[in-house]
Length: 263
Image 1 (cartoon, rainbow, N blue to C red):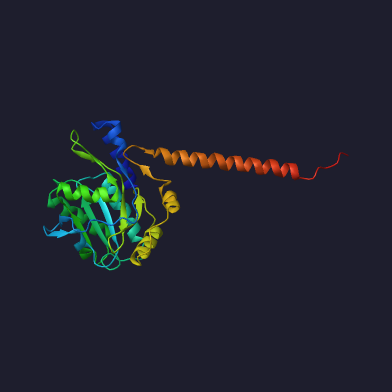
Image 2: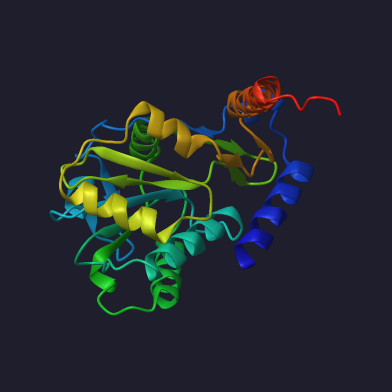
């Protein structure tokens, strides 16, 4: 319920107070590039002030890479809560079976925000051993842009509101730094996440194009408050085809049914 309220508030606040054009809003999206390798030499700063490279966040286990920004108390918090709920329903253990890496898209975000976000995340996760299994990173504009471009995470900064219009979701990355699967939205299946982590740990190939399409069918964009046009069109077309098929089956069954002779 908290996540639903957060997303609703985000939609209302941003739609009323932003100065971005419709075209700019259309550019806010999460494009999927399964199989693409992350630029592992990018440099960031961890919540404790330690300078590191992205590859230092990998230790032989899959990584949940979550883009957003720490001071966002609406959509980003909805994503974070959704991840935590899914992880609590999963049999995987943070720090042992996988790692979590949050990356701020705001280059001006202070470390105090990163530390506060990490503390809140670990408190809500409420499982032992999580402290050493996650990184909350800030970075320079160039590093942020290269990473978000790589994973297809496109966002826009609105100077009028001092906020970011951005998509919702995260990426499961294999231990070798290759993108395995995307999770879009704020509500995530614990079983699907568990499966993705298990397959990513084994170095499995990313889902096929057909599987990716199925995963995208319910991709809802909270910023624009509507479904992607091409997805909606495809769903409508499939619905019409299904109705036509049912009508043809009914018509055929009527024609083939034996006629009762008149009394």
